[in-house]
Length: 354
Image (cartoon, rainbow, N blue to C red; front, side):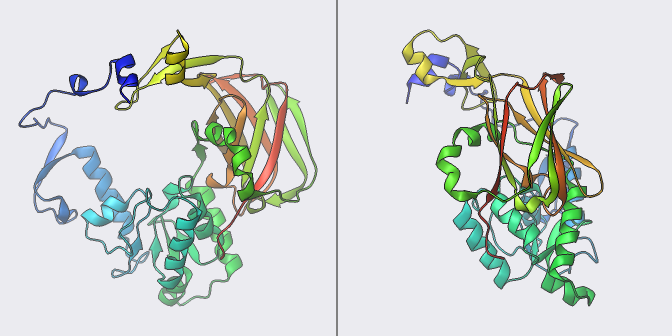
């Protein structure tokens, strides 16, 4: 346990900032006391930009006509803290770090079925994909763009005195997410999942899609299907690229910072303590269009050539029809030719019962 700190000499008390009895707030902070918008802040200094962001989020969560004043919000998303600070009633004291995984998502969906309310999950489309997919496609919750919340169809029909069919709800959600998200950045997640794909196969099935052909066009590769399909039929894609293990970098990860030292492997011990990164600065971009012709792109750091890409997490994929995807390769934001061999497999992740 002590080997890595000894090797890197960058962690531990010696490298922590000096401890002080007070912190001097500069001009970028504002003083808050008994704030009516954020009553639970108490007396404190808060960075002015963070305060403005907090107020903006609370304004969205409190929009009159979008949400009943006494309605509960299932604050799973990144705005959980705002509902707490502003005393907005929550349906459950749960954060996104708690509701990972299939079983947790099933239990959460059961709660949302029994207690219809508002759900704040749009910003967690990747980290909580099981639940996000259920919210978007089940027909039980419909997107409210002003407050950026999903509301139970049962509550919406009662409040607005309208009838919402499952098909209409799915159309609204597909369009709403297409407008909400332009792109998705998966960073190293796609590469990590791709490396583990063999152990994850049991949670996927292979959908019956039409035939497709892949055509090199300049530095890009275009994949085109013979027939259009709904993105909900295939919400994941496994990609293998040739020749991606040619460039390897070894580095020491710092546990208490985002920095990393890239070093030469010196002996088997230090190599075992280091992580490997392939193709630093290389990015795979997969672009598609939604039903309105708007382009969306999923970006993934290129690792050793195996990627499991969650297309469904990107706006414009689920509940939109698709025929064409374009693959592009960038190095430090400059487009480069795609690898000679590109193998693609479309997959369907297991679902939560509607």
